[in-house]
Length: 86
Image (cartoon, rainbow, N blue to C red):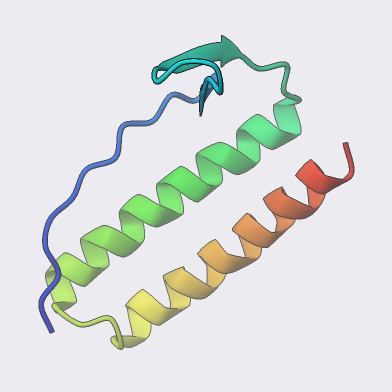
């Protein structure tokens, strides 16, 4: 299976959205709890680990890749639930 390399830029304390009145992007600082920041960091670390394991194993179905992916799913779900409670 082939997977092309990609890099996403992260801005841990900002969110970016499209301004509806203009065709440009604007950033704004977020007010975010330390728990959410910790979750964001855990998600980032797990994602990097999963990408690294994929590079080593060259397989999305390798046991280690699936384990990390499952942990990542749990953290993302936890993050999304805490966001919807706001």
